[in-house]
Image 1: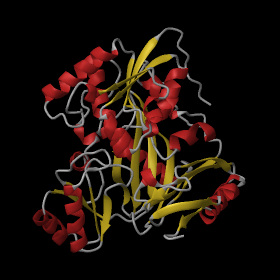
Image 2: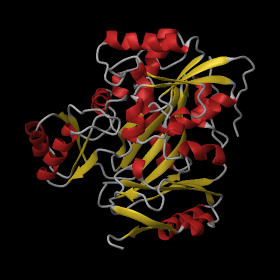
Image 3: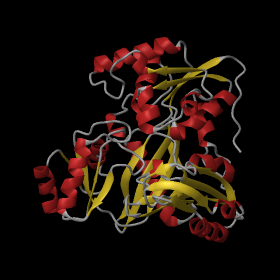
Image 4: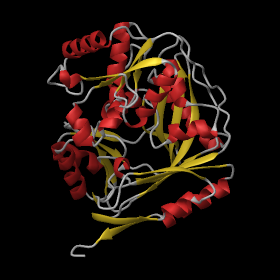
Length: 438
């Protein structure tokens, strides 16, 4: 396993929006001897009440915490002009004091972290860093200009624009919000009526990060297996480190809800093709430092870009890589933004098979009991699990990755055992509900 570098002197590192998949970066930074400063570009009340992060999740393993809302009525997510953004960047840099690194720790933070790094002369993404990395319409437009294969698409603000697109590309079509994540606010529409309904929903509501969408992206549906391609760059070149198969299902509430995420062999020619495709995407977008998480569908015409983010992978992929390989993406990320050269894992040595398996809630109600956990923990490949519900909780059907109640991590040397245990998890897990009046 890749070992963290231990710093003997006192160094300061700013972790921007270190929640969700970025939480583990705090632990790695502390192990490396850094003083950790968490900088949140959202209001604390929104993170706690809107998204549902606990106080511990926002504060643990951080020596200092800054919320931009403590200083500004408008958060960085709402700042529009270059002058507003520059003023906020300067305030944060002054509040942090001397820094040895600025790390984008989750998806919403990547542009702000790049601006901080550029303003302070620290390692970061290139000066060509572009808002297209966070806006899915701008991403599509930039990829189109570069000749990267992707679905046909359009940005739409009203029903007339939507009708023009659907007249040329009939349903089924995909429509989604421009800055959401984790399958939230992504809809497959089979009829024009459904398409109009989802457009109205996207434009009238806020996404998972609290953004009010001014437009939606409508796209053609691409057939084929979908893969998560995780890459890492040392500032000069980028390379795929691991590839995972997305197995998704329509659970009646969420189209293509996560079910299983399974590590793939890069010796497979099809997987190698997907890796080469995403490496090319990163080079076109000048994403050459730190982690990149891409999503690709292998269509009959070849790899097709779904989307990407300059961030660590979620869905426990970053948790599993140090277990089944000699590459730790979190250690490498801290190094990439604090050293002149990040160690590049040219050949990641895979040492096992792994999967991240999800259990969902299929109805609304009050939880009476949860079944199957004891059986799951006895499986030969069981590694760990996370359960987010308890008896007595009132829950709704799972609508996306953030509200799937169970995540089981499996690790083994055998693909056959892994597949058998994946099926066993789904067969064992269940939620019993308290019936009204009982």
